[in-house]
Amino acid sequence: MRLIFVNRVYAPSEAATAQLLTDLAPALAEHRWEVHVITSGAAGLPACESSTGVTIHRTAPPRFSIRPLRRILQYAAFLRGARRQLARLAAPDALIVLMTDPPMLAVAATFVGLRRGARVVQWIQDIYPEIVPATIGAWSAVPLAPLRWVRNRAWRAADRCVTLSDGMRAVVDAQLGFPRSCRVIPNWAPRELETAPPPAAVAAQRATWGLTDKFVVAYSGNLGRVHEFDTVLAAAARLQSCRDIVFLFAGGGARFPAVRDDARQRQLANTVFVETQPRSNLAVSLAAADVHLVTLRPGFERLVFPSKVAGVLAAARPLLFVGPEGSEIAPLVTQHDCGAVVANGDAAALAGQILHLRAGRSRWQQQGQNARAVYARRYVLAEAVTAWERLLHELMAGT
Image 1 (cartoon, rainbow, N blue to C red):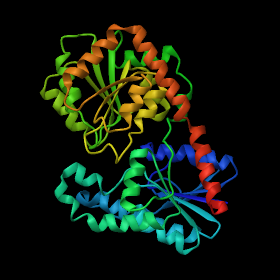
Image 2: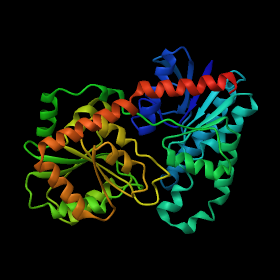
Image 3: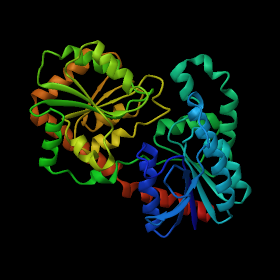
Image 4: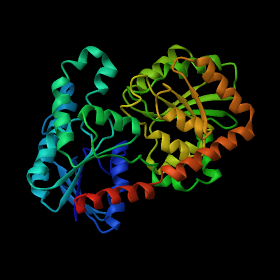
């Protein structure tokens, strides 16, 4: 049966949703699905090609770009192109999976597929537009209400919705006003993390970053607007006298420059900032840390579920979560004893947890092993493929 994924990014992009789809689509193709991916085009990439069993259809990029409007123009160009491609590919025997990049993809594409008799699944990675008021203020909720209404209309029309966590599913059900056929399928860690990297490669990476003989507290991945860093930097300030403790920020994102500048203004000599690591080096870079940080601002706990959680667990390192207790990450960490939970703003508690882990190597190792066990049970690609196949076969059977 024909399976069509729609997302703005795909390989060779290494954006988070591109990596997820670049894992899942070929895996389903190996299970004899006819898999297509509609994604955005870029210079040097063919408009259509087959790779790893997947047929990739790329939309035409914008012909011109005015810098202040670049993102909007890119989104608009992709949505127009995706609708055309979807109209051509969709048929009564097709299953369409819409991701959430760009944010209102469901509004633009759902009814194109339904009009052609296809079944539609909403794969919800982030809940927009609710993220906007949580980011810039509640005042924006009113002008965004029409977007929420048309988004809900698309969700209701779809055959299934898929979220990453129970909290996100609760938001979807609440917006729809009735229990929906909403499935929770967690994101997984990149398949490269299934095997631990050689110790020599990890040691070489630490030496490259000047971290030999250091206790490394790392934040790896996107430094986005939903993440919180004031508590982390305040903890780094408290630990400046501990010359062997270093805070490593490896990534990018909207807040990366601001966090780096803030660390410089605070004169935090125990912070190191490096660029986003390529996927080919991800296992080594994650293993180069002793402890990993995951942060979340209050108000986002049911709107997102950071994908970096799976990577930290796969790396067999303790996870220090800085965020609201209402997030599902908090009980995940405490129930499985794979790290610690610190409230937003409690820099003293975060510094204390770091010192505790540094001082107790046996405790550090045990929590790392516990983290790896959680990964093996919940966040491997094979488990996700099984869950997706179960869902898709239900749709084929009309159940």
